[in-house]
Length: 269
Image (cartoon, rainbow, N blue to C red; front, side, top):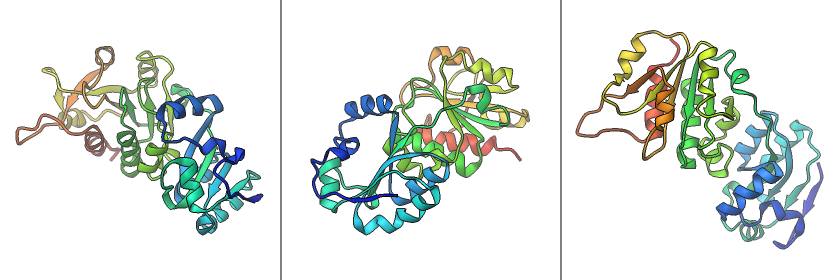
């Protein structure tokens, strides 16, 4: 892999890394070029181990050794730009976590049917726009043992830099895809033998422990936005509405916390 010293933030070769704090720019830039950003040596290593291909790497000299071994194992010929820390910060507009960023090519996502073919526990995310919550849900899925995650079109990007960072790179570990038809793709889950349960507050909801006791072989648990929860269209498409019993006058949990509770209760035993 070519290691190329760079000493100017204005270097055209660093264009992929410039202006990353501008959310609107990133949302238009990344889909157009098919890129996402992996930040930190550990996250970059996990992305490479998952078979993702780097377009380039930007690293401070101090952290070059931290990514060198992973890059060598991946047998990539992507350029590695080595720059002083102040150049990294000037280019990106923030202090880069552990002095390393990689512009990664986005992988081709499977269809919903392909994704869940061998799964027993699936998490479905609708309208969750906070990247921190998306990353935390992926980390819980990896740690507790969900087999796959389906992301609705209205959900934040799991490969957004903040999501990847919060997930500790588990977005590369948990198989996932983005639904193309919504909520129509929920029918693909039913065709595969899944009972689709929506986590929501509703008068006809059953408690999570009651639903778990039914012992369904294949379960897809769906959760919605941080404010309004699941959409009406999504709720009309579920087989059951499930709620987590609460105490202390609290009506609900943060969606990331709720997902962890639901995954634990519904885990394959």
